[in-house]
Every structure is written in C-alpha cells, then in structure tokens.
Amino acid sequence: MPFIPHTDSDIREMLAAIGAGDIEDLFDEIPKSLRFGELSGVPDGMTEQEISRLMMERAEADGRPLCFMGAGAYDHHIPAAVWQITTRGEFYSAYTPYQAEASQGTLQLIYEFQTMMAGLTAMDVSNASLYDGASALAEAVLMAVRGNRKSRSRRILVPTTVHPAYRKTTRTIVDNQDIELIEVPYCSEGGNIVPDSLGHFEGDDITAVVIQHPNFFGILEEVDAITDWAHRQGALVIAIANPTSLALLKPPGKWGEHGADIACGEGQPLGVPLAAGGPYFGYMCCKQALVRQMPGRIVGRTVDRDGRDGYTLTLQAREQHIRRSKATSNICTNQGLLVTAATIYMSLLGAEGLARVARACHASTRVLVEKLTENEYVEPLFNRPCFHETALRFSLPLADVMRPLYAHNLLPGYDLSKDYPELGNALLVCATETRTAADIDLYADHLNRVISAQTVAGCPVKPKMA
Image (cartoon, rainbow, N blue to C red; front, top):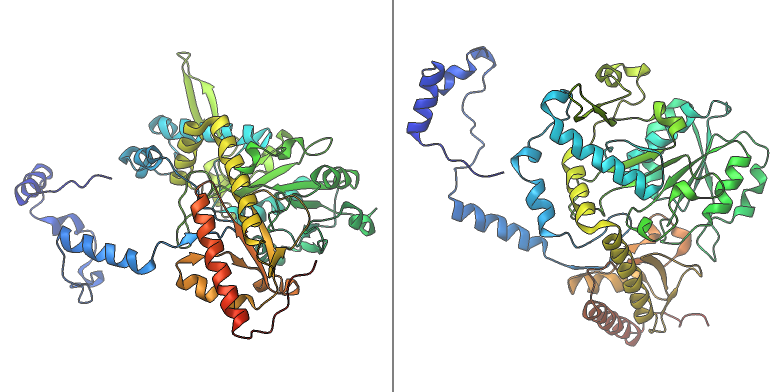
C-alpha cells in the first residue's frame, strides 16, 4: 500500500472539514478512565533511512540459506507481477465481501479462484479457501461425517503417510467430537499405503478414508485402488494434494471409478512466498452432492436485472457462520489476500506454465537424488516413484551431518526422525524449479566433504547396503 504523508496543514484542513478541534476529538466517545495515556515502552521514532537499515540488518541476521527443505512448504519462483498487483490498495485492504453491491471486484476474483481450483482438482465445487492445509483436512473430516449419512461409526482411516502436522491438527479439532481417527501404517519398502493392507477393515463401518498424494514422503500412492476400495465399503474419500503436482498427476476428481469426494490441501505453492510460520491458505473442493456441507464461503455468479454478470456469496447466509453448533464450521474465514495472489499466479502461468513448473521440480529432484546418492553413505529410503521430494537414508548420525551443512548456509532437508523415529537417520529432501544444477552441485560437494570429515574422524559408520 503506498505511503501517503499528511502535513500539519493537511491535518488542520481535514479536521476543520468535519468540525473537530484536534485529533483527540475523534476519540471523545472513549471515556478518559479507559484511556491508557502515554506509551512509555514505545521507542523513539526513526527516519526512513534508519528503519530501512534496521530491517536489512534483521533480515541479514536470518540469512538467505539455500533451501532443499519441503515437508509441506515449497520454495517456488513467484513472478514479480503477482504481489505487485496483490498489494494494491483495492485488494490489500479488502475484507470478506458480505455486501455484494460494494464488493463485485473481490467477489469476481474469488469466483475465478474457485473456478481454477475446481478445474485443477477435477471437482464440482470449490470454496473461497480456509486457514491452511492442516485445518482444511480437519474441516474435510467434519464435512465427511456430516455428509456420509449411511455411516454411523464416525471412524476415519488416516494413513501415517499423511503430513504429521495435518494429523495432529485434525486430531486436536475432532477428538472431542466423538470422531475416531484410525492410523494406517505404511509399507517400509515403498513408503506408501498398500491397498491389500486395508483388508482387515473389510466390511467395517468406515465413514471416510484420507489419501495424501503425493504423500508426506513425496511418494505416489495407489490412489485408484484405494479410492475404489473405500467406495465399496461405503466410505467417502478425502484427497490431500499439492496443487502444483496436479498439473501433471491425475486429479482427485478422477481417482478410481468415481473420483474422490472431497479434495483439500495447502495452497502455499501457488504464489505465496516462504515465511516464518505463514500465513498460508487451505483450499477445499468437493462433489456437488456435498456442497451444502462445505464449510466457509462460496461465491456464485448470476445475472442482474440488466443482464450483466453479478457475483455474490451463495448457499450460506452470513448468520450461518455465527450459529455455533448449527454452523457447518466455526473457523470459516477465507484467506482473501493469499487467494488473490494465488489467482494472479495461476492466471499468469496458465495450465501449460504450471505443468512446466511441475516437470522442472520433478527433474530437479531426480538430479538431486542422483548426486547425493553417489556418496556411499547415502541411499534412497523407498523404492517407489516420487514427485519433487523424497527420503534418503544416511548410514551415519544425521545430526552430525546437518550441523555443518547449516553452517555452510544450507537447509539440507527435513529430519524425519522427529515424526518417524523408526526410520532412523532419514532426511526428506526437496528440489523445486528454483534449484539450479550449480545449487545441487554445491549441496553435493558440501555433503561429501562433511561425510569425509566424519568418517576420517573415526565416526562409527558403515557403508550403505548394496
């Protein structure tokens, strides 16, 4: 938003125009007993030059490490036009458009976002977004419980290949709502869910099955077989998908014979930069039959009395969001600003551009894995195809490897032992289209030197298995 300075003369003229003596008169409705007075803890003001230097110093203190970490948040190139347009005042200051007559621009943008997401996922309907991917899964579980009227068990199968943070968030939200989340273990060789392993649930009352594809390990799941199995059991299918991957992989709406019933996930890859904790945004799409159970806001297009296109919030009244137990959701705010960025990002890239990004990501990850596994102490952990991240096993203590790589300004990957201790010294690595051949060579060179130093120092290691 542009900086608009007001001189003392400007302020006097504006106050005179509204009949106020000074700025304090604008707050005369607040009793003096409630006013705080002076803010003693606020530091002195700084000049533009001083504040610019301060912010640069703080940014440099964080550094600009070369990132090979994914695990749900990805470093993609974002065209300059995306945030140049997104941060225009018309978008930057816009709130949720309850008053359609005053919000046609914002409503149209959200409608375009919904159209793009429905097309990308091959689903019938999309909402206007949710807080993030993790809470989107929790909402999808609640939606499935409401929508699957044939099931009374409120039991959800959640594979352990689903993002650990998503599972934790979902459990936090649904545990006290008499919903049971049943974890399904993964195959130790493939890092995926084997459809035959679901056999012991055959004939049980299962409300829904969650499938993340690509899963947290970056591995491609057997989505067709699992989807068809779930539908034969009378269960709904909740898909979690990286939106970038959908430019290449079969979309959730086409999984199996009838497609997934609900699709959700994290929208951060679509034009949102990496940041310390966010903000991110979740997307959610579904089949037409479940649209009345969809949480959040939905924008529809109609025609006014003059025959012109018009946009409005539809299917749900505003009061629906504040009726507590009667509402479809109690956390239904959409991430309007980030949705704006995502819509502009998808518009600029188009289907072909997004597919190029996805192919470049996959190619970069293959090169990364080839380079890193040239070292005899590193090998792939799983034997199935991946998208743009995958797990590697190290035959020496991972902490001793990562520490010096951090010192070389590298983020080498995500330590899987935090969430999957059974995997031992396993690292989840990722390479998007932003990682060049020189970046990958630099990582491999540093890694080889670190491992060489560790082994020469007498670290108790053994070469990888044949």
